[in-house]
Structures are given as structure tokens and as C-alpha cells.
Image (cartoon, rainbow, N blue to C red; front, side, top):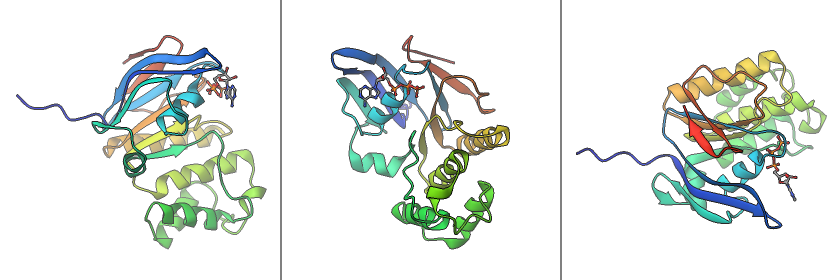
Length: 214
Ligand SMILES: Nc1ncnc2c1ncn2[C@@H]1O[C@H](COP(=O)(O)OP(=O)(O)OP(=O)(O)O)[C@@H](O)[C@H]1O
């Protein structure tokens, strides 16, 4: 009998509480290559907290996270995943190009032509030498999404990727996700639900109901 491939990421009875108040869980889900999981919930439901737990930035209260079948570890996470946080984390005094170059180098990429292409693709052509601190909220989001693509990580953990984007930006995010999924990547996308999902098979995890469904 063929052995099923391990999920890229798998949560098993994952719980998180703050000040003795349960924020989410127990959650059980897996994401395989070629899949998108949309994490839905109202403001304050715990989406950002879940993504921070999955990225190893907050310890879970209980439960397990496995990456490709192995218990969560920092090295495994860095090899596998890229995290697009709620906060963009750019260095305000560095330019768009310098921020992108720095991020790409951290992910082992040293390819100036790639950086140029990513800047044009994210709509920031002409802003290469602008300090990130002078970008609008939507432009900062676009730069974050360019940084996400600078590496070649199969799993994208995307916290509110649509926030602050105009309609063209939302369509662009969906096209990026679609391309990533169709080339064998996977994505977990949090949203409060006001936006159209990418045109790929998407499962939904409503963290208030704690159940994944297709
Ligand atoms: N640093 C913090 N200290 C204390 N409580 C926090 C902190 N961050 C979040 N919370 C609380 O944890 C709960 C979940 O917050 P979280 O940011 O994960 O929600 P969310 O679903 O991402 O919300 P939104 O859609 O508004 O971004 C909320 O009740 C929030 O008030």
C-alpha cells in the first residue's frame, strides 16, 4: 500500500490561551502541496495569533505542529515556510530595493534581475530608491509580497494579505497565490472574509467553529 506523503504543515489539537482565556482551539488541520487554506474569523477571532503560533513566534498552549512529518523546529520552518506578518517589518530607512535585496539574501537569493522583476511586478517600479518609511500602507504591503516571493519557500503563511490593497492589488495577490499553488506550493491565508478567494481549490478553516471544510 502506498504511504501517504506527509503534509507540509499539520496542526494536531492546537490550542492557545491568553490570560486563561482560550483564543483558539483545539484545531486540527493539514495543508498539502498544491493546497490553499483560508483561515476566516472576525476581528479579534485569533487569526493573527494562530499564524504567529504556526510561525513559531508564540508557543502553543497545547497540541502539536508538524512540518513535513517532523515536530516543529526553527530550521525546518525556515527551510519550508515564509511568513507574511500583519506588520510589514521593513527597515524604514532602507530603500525599496535595499529592503528587497536584504530579504532575498536572507533567503539565499542574490539575483538583481529577479529583484528588478519583483519590483516591477508588485507595482513599485520608480520607487526603487524610495525609503520604505515613505511608502503608503498599500505600497508597503506590495513590498512585503515582493519579499515573500524573493525566496522559494513552498509554504506561504499570509496574514491578511489583502489588507490595504486596492482592487487591482487584491487581484494581483490572488494571481500570485494561484501561480504558487499551481506550481506545487501551498498557502495559508487569513482574512476576515470580505475578499474574493484565489481561483484555486480553497479549503476554509473558520476558527470560531474550529473545523476545516472544502
Ligand atoms: N499582544 C496582545 N496582548 C493581549 N491580548 C492580545 C494581544 N494580541 C491580541 N490579543 C487578543 O487576542 C485575541 C485575538 O487577537 P488576534 O490579533 O489574533 O485576532 P485577529 O483575528 O487576527 O483579529 P483582526 O481581524 O482584528 O486582525 C483578541 O481578543 C485580542 O484582543
